[in-house]
Length: 322
Ligand code: GLV
Image (cartoon, rainbow, N blue to C red; front, side, top):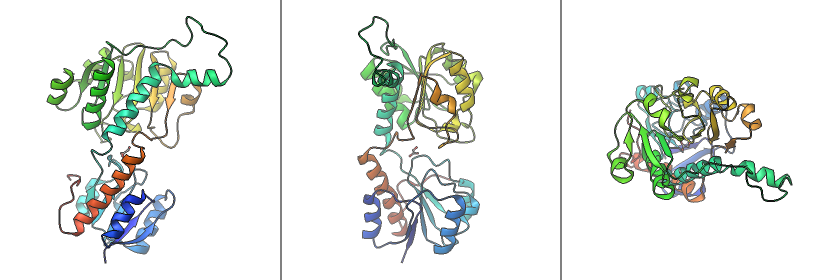
């Protein structure tokens, strides 16, 4: 019988699918495991399949602690936490959950852009604190989006969807940087492509980050680059925290160069630079951009479908190309 180890409980929809397919779920964690604990569980059960999360470090030491392991299915679209060189060397298939969360993450990103430019969190705190004493002509002035320029860093599925929402819904002009041109973005929102990031940044009113974490994107945005943004720009990140040097982001925000920052991801999450809590012009969410009930269920089902397909001798739909 195929044995599956689930590092931490995922929505029931995925668990049921695996069970209904006749796979044996040998362990289902009820909390985040440390690397040491995950290794212990893998040694104890030596499963055929591992369901992991973006919070697990899946390196060679972890993978080789279960000699039977054939597939690692991550409950996330990002797979920067998995050492792909090691999976290749050990002949372990990796799958992820692309596509199903695009709309949800794009909607959350649009929400963060609105919250940051309209100072919604700051205004909410102000009102709750009993500070609203009557209408004022210049109380908590924000920024309009119509006619402003959205810079999309990483024009994959999510970046493209954010561009569509912000262009068609808010009338923003779209420019983007990526390693390749995206013809769909040209056709649908008349976007301008910037092959060089440094050339795009000075034109950006709102920068939204959607690149995956890879060696080439780690710390892609440092103080130098952030200072290239227009003065008064807004910075939004729903991809991975390590794409940005968080201490540089804080310095640039504190210097007054940026109007606001909205983040769902952090360089050292769950740790967050304290200063981000103290500054008024930050909107901070706890890595929940894909967290709708529907989407998290679909992600869990996708995790299960990939494992089931693999053990049926088919190639899983969402296999990461090594
Ligand atoms: C979320 O960040 C994911 O990668 O699914």
